[in-house]
Amino acid sequence: MRSARSDPSSGREIAAAALARAVLIARAAATLSAAAAGLLLVEDRSRVVAVLVLVAAVTAGQLGALARWPGLVARPAVVVAADFVLVFAVLAVSRGGIAYFCYAAGAGALAGVVLGMRALPVWVAHAAVSFTVTAEVLRRSAPPAEIAAFVVAFPMAGALAGLGAVVATTALARHLELSTSLLVAAQRSAAASERARLARELHDSVAKTLRGVSLAALALPSSLRRQPALAEHLATTVAAGATAAARQARELLLEMRFDVPDRDFATGVGEVCAAWSAAAGIPVRTVLTGLDPPVMVGYELTRILREALANVARHAYARQVVVRLAPTRHGVLLEVSDDGVGFAVPEDLSRLQSASHFGIVGMAERARMAGGRLFLDSAPGAGSTVSVHVPLDGRDEPAGRPGPRFVSAS
Image 1 (cartoon, rainbow, N blue to C red):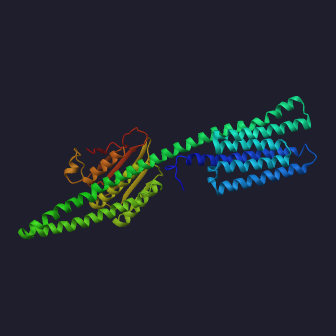
Image 2 (image 1 turned 90 degrees about the vertical axis):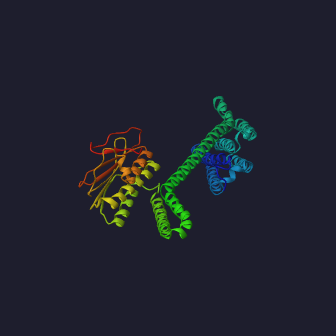
Image 3 (image 1 turned 135 degrees about the vertical axis):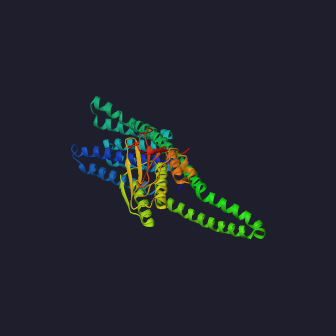
């Protein structure tokens, strides 16, 4: 199967196949309506019934063929030749009635769909046959002048319908090609963002650990003979670092497994909380509202949630955690609260990093990458609350309480 990316003509073929079906259905509807009206005007109804059966059967066959072999539109000569034969069949059965002219006009439209402006000879041929039929009808029935002028205009309907079909097919093909280009660009952008994201995660976790392991391993041979105690310490460092790198890789893979863009974001947050609660043995109460933030915002919020829960497990000695996800006036709010021991939040929040609170600094950096801000509210014996607000319309809003302090990522 050819893709729209590699074959520029595929957009035209898709448009032609779609419009060809529409033309066949419209032609059948117009022809059947015109023929059915003749049941009230003619005495010999068998000919009208024959036209109805023929047009219905032929249209069903054409639609079935297009459904099974949509590539037929890429063979316009076959399509036009077969349709020309069917036009003559309708002409023979209807004997030049109004059903024939409707069917012939549809034939001109079908030729315009599959051939474009190259259908001009086909329109001329159909017009010549229609003018001949018109002359015979006028000679045979001798209608009033007003009706005769109206009938003479019938042969031009095929060319006009064909021109309309050419315009519609070209417009639809261009629309499909533009949509395909935009989709490919979006896929490439998403792939680039995913690569950058994975590179950042690997750099922040596994790569740093492996770098330390590598440095310890390089120093190991030279110290093996001269300083056995140091060599033993370095060997222990290498083993511990390798174990840590493997654990970090497993955690990263686990996080990627939870990161499913097509899943409801609140559902993903609930699953993360349930998995952490089962592993840490600390109950989590969730208050979640269904939200659909952008993929990258949802990813960063999920990582902030994981880091906040990890901090609770390491430092808080909490008995319960409450996780709240809610929309705000201009964006989304994620809040993680615990009833643990808490700590004194320093006036200068840069001291958090010097006090080895790297997790909070990392969460602040992720909040900034998502376009939002992270707030921290804690006191000794009063638990801790980490809240992240990400505006989704470009406008920020203040925190709901005056107590939390904005944590800068710088």
